[in-house]
Image (cartoon, rainbow, N blue to C red; front, side):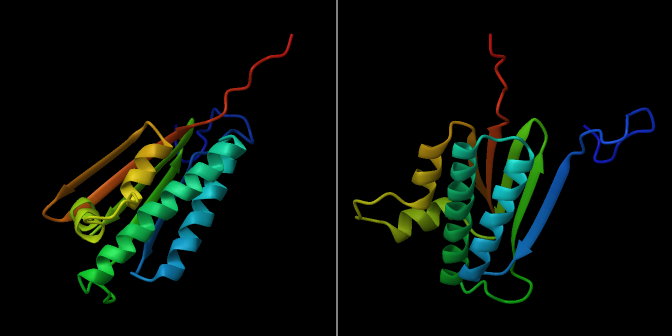
Amino acid sequence: MPLLPTPNEPPGAALMSQVSLAVGADPAHVRVVRLVAGAVARRAGVDEESVDEVKLAVGEACALAVSAMQAHDLTGHADRLVVEIEDDAGIEVVVRAPVDLEQHALDAHAGELFPDGLAVIRGLLDDVSISSDGAGSLVRMSWAAEVAHPTV
């Protein structure tokens, strides 16, 4: 779906939203990202229960990234957590962190009985992928829009 309507589309045709946020390793920014993700999810037609899951999962991913960035002293102006949110037949959220989130979660929660943020995210939705490389980590999550069922 194009970001803007084409000349052949009627006025008011659905537009795809794409939001990118780059925030520092400040826990206060997690709330802002969570609220933006919830607003985009609502606009995309995600049901209200799933909107809460979007906000929780995005908050967990960002909180883990902020914690990892602080633990690795990545708190300078150039060190950014990037969150990309797109609505297209639902919502997709991509969180990019300049650290290895899976290794940080293992180190931070070694020997604890409580799950780390990645375990919470994996428990919230089926469509999630978490990958790491030398440049950092990528958490990709998606939710489908609510499908309206006709009443008889």
